[in-house]
Image (cartoon, rainbow, N blue to C red; front, side):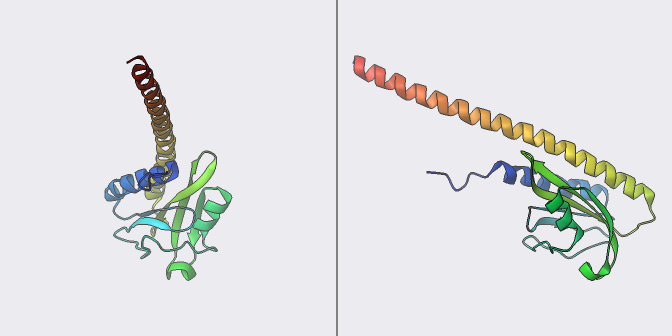
Length: 168
């Protein structure tokens, strides 16, 4: 029977991003950031100058650029039309990939399109988060290996106990 409190590797990776993003966003208060799974926002951290007003659980609109990022597994950098959120802004999105499958995305929003420095910082953050994904995947694999080893030890322990009972 599967323990309901056990989370999937994909959920663990997305949770790691949810824990890291507020720290990064606090260093760049003008920039808004969020994380999604394949269908909805999991967390959103508004900036001082931009706030999309999205909340955890809000579905990703199928015609917005973020949906394209997830569906086609491609990095997005675009000017988002005001029809989506009521004002235009520059949006960056990077898919989060685990086992060659998109499990979510990181979204970054800037309202100051002419500030090249913020764009460079955002590009660096997207790259760093991508590298962090590789590290998280490696940790998740180690956890899987540890679980497998624990299961093997439990089986061997039961076998040994059975042999001892037969001898006694």
